[in-house]
Image (tube, rainbow, N blue to C red):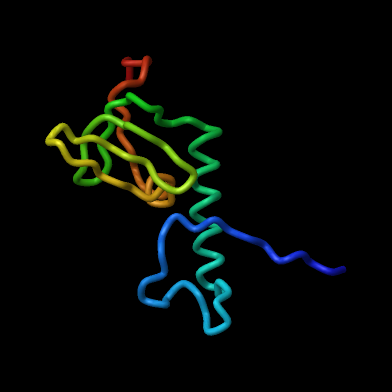
Length: 105
């Protein structure tokens, strides 16, 4: 079976040459990390534990979700900044969604 090479659209530049190997291919370790990030994004998109506009807290961050991509969730803490959280961390950690409809514990 011949496997076609996979292509990825990278949303960043490999400034320090740590993502790509000497042949300018993504090495196995980094490919696994990218796959985990993508799976985490798909998991959030399907299960929708948080949605754009929800008020959430995660670790030291609290604010409104402004965007959710396959790789990252963006939270506005209300101070004019934007906190970018990798979805892999969200799927592995505890996220408090303060905007859920069910308020009875």
